[in-house]
Length: 358
Image (cartoon, rainbow, N blue to C red):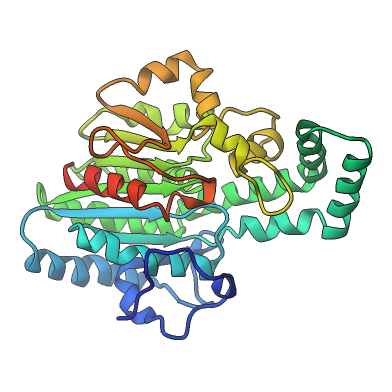
């Protein structure tokens, strides 16, 4: 099996797969969705039979070959990710999790947000706006506000449609709903032998806010040992409604771990060549239905919510803000930008530590 190293993908591979990539070897670890359904075209097709094989063949075989509990990690990528980038990311991360004794299953849910955002403001329009900004000696805040106004009308529709994709995945006929059912059956057949963990980057937190409650509703007797959210694009309101009531219970989500950027790094980040702040800043200011929505991955949003700040100081939940190089294992994060959390060895090792000791 030829896998990619733990390095960012080359630009040429962002929308096409390297010819050396062994897709069949990835199949036991990958669920490809399109509009919430199993993808029946594209680079890698996923069917119900493929999911059945994961739980009936691949996982039992792995358990026979490895001692101790099966540590099963469900990974959901962020909203910047096309199908090709999702598959490339899965191939890059697979060796990392396996080396730590973790069996990963990657949801590829083809959000493609980056492509959509690129199309909202043509380069000519961006250059014109930039020249206007220089002519008027506008400060960065005014430039950012101009970009936010420009992308808001269509950007809100794109962002809302991405959430619809997550909802479709857990609908009665959705691919993630099928996985949740098979997972519940599998854990019920193997009481005490399986640990369920989840990790999501950026919009992956939105995906898990739908997938994990659905799995837990089946009441298989096995809860979610840990939920690790990296630069979570989930609104605090949706977190309080969908996930927080489940955190802290052995039959719910035992442990919640957040990783995000310190607020200055959010301000120093940028989205492409267009927006001089992080993607989470753009989502909060322009893409959510209401401007300035608090996001779980924004330190400034968490700090402004005393109740949430207190919750993240309990035994069941914590937050690590990058850059944090020292401290207890599982609390280290050196990501420098929104898009680097799933490439940062310190963050990935922290998540692996949380899962391996869960």
